Length: 169
Image 1 (spheres, rainbow, N blue to C red):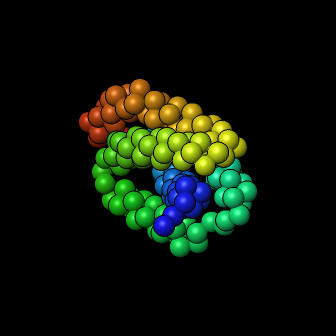
Image 2 (image 1 turned 90 degrees about the vertical axis):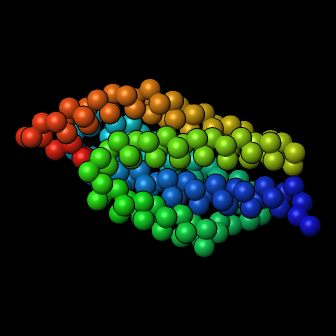
C-alpha cells in the first residue's frame, strides 16, 4: 500500500521525466524553425522555463529523500526523439508542432494540478508552492500557443502557397 508521500514522490519523478521530454522536444523544434521567429523566440523562452522547472522538481524530490528515475527520464527523452524525427518528415511540421505543443502543455497543466493536491494532502507546502509556480508557466505557454495557433496557421498557409518560400519550418 502506497502512502500519500510515496505517490507524491512517484508523481514528482514522472513530472521530472515529463519536463526532460519537453526540453528535448522544444529544443528539436527550436533548432528546426527558420521562418517563424516569434514562435521560435517563445519556444526558446519556454526551454529556459522548463530547465528551471526541472531544477525545482529535483529539489522537491531530493527534499523528500528520493532521486530521479533514470529509466523514466530516458523513456521521456526517447519519446521526444521519436516525436522530433516524426516531425521532420511532415510537410506541415510547424503547424503540427504547435498543435502538439498545445496538447503537451495541457497534459503538464493536469499533472501539476494533481501534484499540488497531492503535496497539500502530504502537508508539503514547499512542493505545493513549487508546483504552483510551474503551473503558472505551463498555463502561460498553453495560452500563448492557443492565441497564436491561428497566426501560425495563416503564416504557414501563405508560405505554403508561395512557390518560392519554404513553409515547413
